[in-house]
Image (cartoon, each protein chain N blue to C red):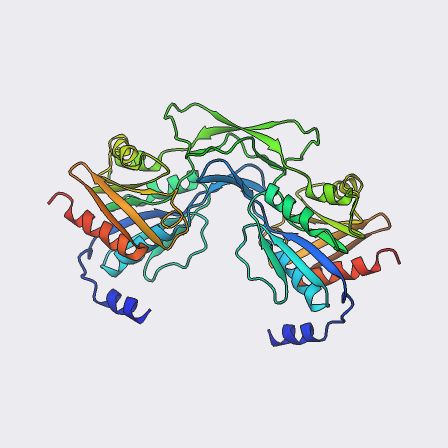
Length: 229
Length: 229
């Protein structure tokens, strides 16, 4: 703990003057007032990135889905619940933003309509269906935005074909890099303290870890500073 | 805090020799390795009941869905994730059980099949559907079980017609009482520290609260001890 604090004090201020926007955590998509769709993202990676960037002198806005994590010191936090709310908060934040990092596990789909009252079981034993519609794509919207930040980084949480999906995602979203990880592995996946990632840019693929999410965060920030060199 | 500890020390041991099984929290129903269906139950009411019953001398088994709560002192906790797992744990626990209290917000439905790999967005913008099948009904299974505990209590988290739904549920589940609350009210609903309930048995409907979940728990245990008097 004291060692971590000492490391924080001696971070180079190499992000001083930079404005970062980071999304983190899952989103929740309402089915009715009681039920929702969500995913197992803990938000730890995004919070670690926000803390690391703040320690290195950046101005950080952290747009967080429903997570159970303390706000890192000096970070401006915006809490949201649904993907639509996160989309709106992200788009509202890109004016003046130098680096956008989308770590959030944004729900790809939401129920086409949320019921006003709790849906009752009819007791018939019959199957039901939920109709889902696509949520807005935050990373692609920012990657292709007319006010696109200079640097746009996405995450890809995959359970297979990690590098291939990351390379595809890099092109489709017009991102500068995708940070891919394999969430099927319990030692490094959602909720774990450690992470092992693959940094995929046009120029190179760089593996890192397994390492603490704090060290992975600093690795990612180092890679961002190296972009275009 | 000290006042609460003192109250705990001086609880009457009026549940001494009784074995209680309490379910608590939400369940999570997997869509794929990353995504799930769940609900906003915090588990606080069930944990408060487990603590109160233990303080009053009962042997308590607490079957908990995924919640972020500490186990009350002296309580035997069984962690589960899905409704099917909770059903199995509950049925396995009823031998020798005197009182079953189902506070958990068990998912009524689960995806008919959970995908082995993360489902990819196809980018077509087309709607998708999730097919849902009914989960086993834990409360009804225990209410109608050949080894039914002497006392079976259910909860009803409703957003409308609270008393009517509770009375219906009492009959269908063969329960001794249903504790109903209106989760549409943010002051007493899921996650709130306080609760306001309606105890609905064949004999009477008794409102209680708003009060702390601890006081609601002791009210419910008092009502259980009064059953059949």
